[in-house]
Length: 83
Image (cartoon, rainbow, N blue to C red; front, top):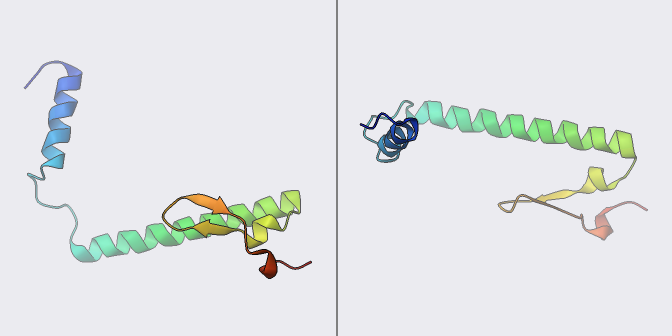
């Protein structure tokens, strides 16, 4: 093992990537983690978009759609927005 700090972190990263250790979580704990994170992200997104609507009074924030998998905010279908 290298005494250089970068060498040590690279060797630790290699150990993690090669999965020499048994997993820290079981399947049930991992599913629970994913569900909790998804709910938290959804709640934070809702609160943020509602806050932006209150501040700007732009209905874009009420009817905006999120593109799944691309992390891009897209405009809603104009037929679905009132007025």
